[in-house]
Length: 235
Image (cartoon, rainbow, N blue to C red; front, side):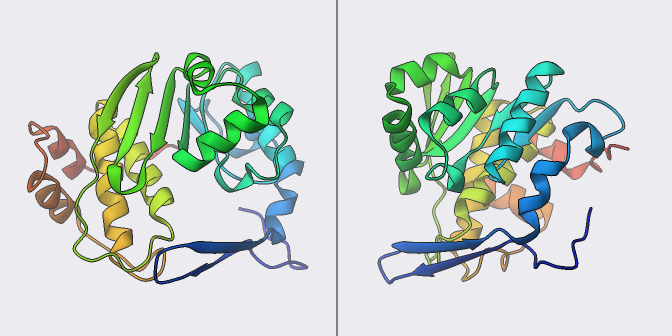
């Protein structure tokens, strides 16, 4: 973790109306310095996988390039930076990605900017996950579609942060070695918790509570019990 006393922490601001339409603004702050550091500086042992999340566009280019050069599997998650990235930059960054996670609107914008079709995108990415809002998500693994349903939300109060929550649940499942569909279902449930609260990080749950709620709607065949074990910590 690096501190830059002359700037504030990167900040995202969302204005959401009663129909859940959102206008977003962003201050990059210290994040603008991310382009000055390499992936190798962040670990002592080669990681199994890297997720390249929205950051300074140059930092994202450097990270994807490093992953390709070091033969590190990576997930490309351009998200909020898609409007800033050109079609050429998007094609460069997604090259060699194991997976990409976007929502339906973002997938449409990527296809327009890169001048490729969704079929082309599915052929370029081994694991393409496109979230569909209240309709869950679509997983294309080697081009084969698997539909993943959404979990019911008790009451939708604020959609902001649901996409990040989905990624959190998805990655936790993948890190535990769970099947991709089950991992995506974990992401769907995490997103439901966020939808039920105002603010992106005001929800909370214990692992047993998460598993119980999951099993109230979906059958994990006992696989989620692995989450009750202490997670391994990389050093």
